Amino acid sequence: MLVKNGLAFVRGAFEQADVRIENGRVTEVGQLSAKIGEEIRDAQGLYVLPGFVDIHIHAFGGADCMRGEADVRRMSTGLLQTGVAAFVPTTMSAYPQQTYDALSGIQAVVDRPEAHGAAVLGAHMEAPFLALKYKGAQLGECLQAPSMAAYDEMVRGLTCVRMMTLAPELPGALEVIAALKKRGVVTCAAHTAALAADIHAAADAGLTQITHLFNAQTPLHHREPGVPGAGLADDRIVVQMIADGIHLHPDVLRVAAKCKGAQGVALISDSMEAAGLPDGQYDLGGQAVFVRDGAARLESGVLAGSTLLMHQAVRNMITLAGIAPEEVIPMATSTPADSVGAKGFGRIEPGAAGVLALMDGSWNFAGVIA
Image (cartoon, rainbow, N blue to C red; front, side, top):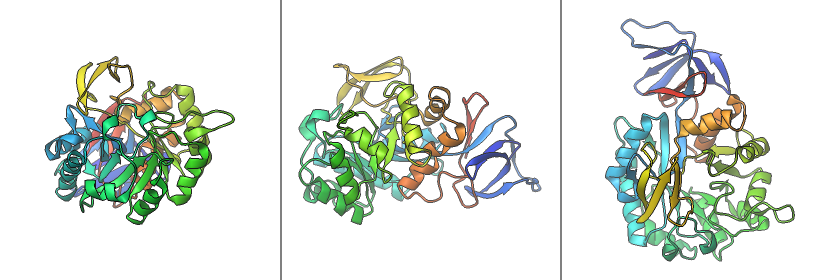
């Protein structure tokens, strides 16, 4: 297929460039002529972007990765239609056997990918090594102290775990961070009572991300910067942000973007099963979640993930936070991909995944090429 006449995001800038996709991969970028019999897609008036990469997503369209392989496959096929090229299904607090079962389902899709779906890059474990005080919508009874013995009990030799969110101030957490780094697992801080010094110490041990910045963590204060302040100040750390206009005020989105730049922010959905569906009552870890005006909350009022889609996050960063598109696009593509070592995603270049997201001049989603 040849995608012509679009304004493509190539090498960090927009340019009039055609993109050729063959056998699921980008093969050429530039001023190209169609081959005999080649399918042509006219992208006149549209931005042509790399497929989005979501490294923190629990569920989508009624499917939840905690329910196993079939739901992960539904997520894969459904997310592709929203412009997502790759994602990291994210588990939540559960008992060890339930966690193992969820990871097994994710492993199955990693090993046998959907023929026409977003790539599953591995699993993101958001639990159980979390602080009870900042549990948010996590199940407190399933939280436990960090240890590699507990980790191995849940994983049992599976190789799909790519990320883990934990509370770095808990006893044993720094040892877990260091051990997971040796295994190639990216560690992130959230659901945590950590002080700024704890975050910097965790970065010394190998921690590289803050999960859903400002949410479920100590706040930013001018005499104790907490988790957000340390994450924004430490150049070793990428911060994940939920840019739905609910979790973070547009000014906060703008401040974080200005502090970290395009290579320091990873936009995430953190979505639960209502993403892509109407308002109503849904489920998260056996808890009733009520979605009103797109905001997902437990009966107590606590936010319970989001209903955000990645293309909406991009639009919000541009239109609500006022960040230049050239800065925003990497936050949803190359930065999250690079942060988890996902080669072949997040850029339009020869050899990259042949998934392109299309957006119009007002930054509305206009379709996907895959």
